[in-house]
Image: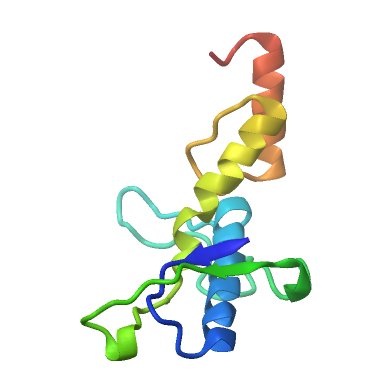
Amino acid sequence: MAAVDAGTVINPDLAAGQLEGGLCRGIALALLEDTDYDKETGALTCGASLVDYKTYTAVDMPSVDAVETFFAHTYEPSGPFGAKGVGEAANNCTAGAVANAIFNAVGIHFKDTPITPERVLKSLREKGSGERG
């Protein structure tokens, strides 16, 4: 589900597409996407192309039909026709929601992203051996 207060929604299909895109981006940021920088120089160390930078695509995401979008019915007096911007609203809270879902599943809080399978497995092993509090 993706929800937003966009004021008066002028184009529901376009606004829903923005929410769905933001949700996709948020899930990818939570689970996959990462950048690594040299601590001394600040230079990006993981390459500068999409070959090196992994991201989810439409093939990796649930069907759009499986994503429910919800718009709060409000009116923004300063916006055109009572509308607000939608932007990437669904992106803002997705990583926290994914981290909470993982906590509910395995009992470990993750505060850094991406929460990769390797990080989950490492944390589960540490939890099992008593290394992690």
